[in-house]
Length: 254
Image 1 (cartoon, rainbow, N blue to C red):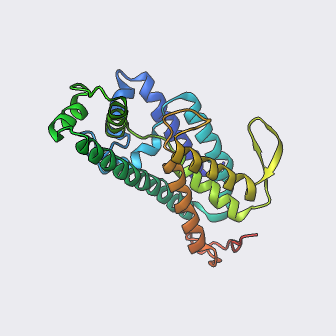
Image 2 (cartoon, rainbow, N blue to C red; image 1 turned 180 degrees about the vertical axis):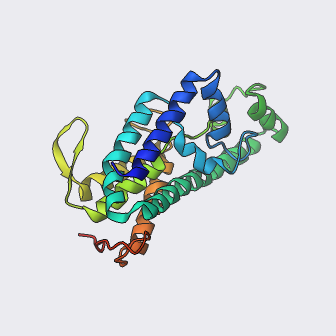
Image 3 (cartoon, one colour; image 1 turned 120 degrees about the vertical axis):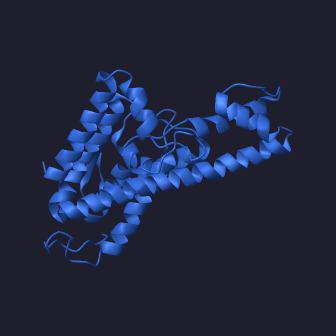
């Protein structure tokens, strides 16, 4: 395993373990390091990086780290450590910014609709700050308030945005590599597997229906993939990586 991938793996595991072993460790780590909506008092600029090292469950960290080792090891060997680190963190930060932008748009859209329905800004602010207060009898308005509260009070965490960037990069470099999809016995070429996964995320993000469960930041996945795609377009005509003039093969789309 290349050193950078190994280092990221170790840091993620140590942070995950600390959340369970230290007194109130998980709560403190999420409060300080997860990515909160900017209107939340817990928000900090450093969280666009720190959120990538936090995970909500054993399955969450397992699948992210499995993908990091599987795809990241190949990319680091081909690119070198410096270029890999730049790519990984740009995808992760880009995913955070894009998801925050989507949340901002949804938040203000819901807020404006609630104001138009007769709720006062002070009543909405009180509900967001405390989670308590007057709830209108209209079920539709209640649903909008719950969605608004979820955006403001629900932090984002996980390395998935950066991982999706790695998936896209792998697809550029090895489009015909066969990948195994869970519950599908036939391996699928990366050039079909990865776009299919992105379309599934787009469908889930737009409709709210997800076969992988609730609470998934689908637009963060798509954001990390978009940044990875743009970086690969920028780098595809370069025949040298960033580390010491190390020669690498030119990236081409097949």
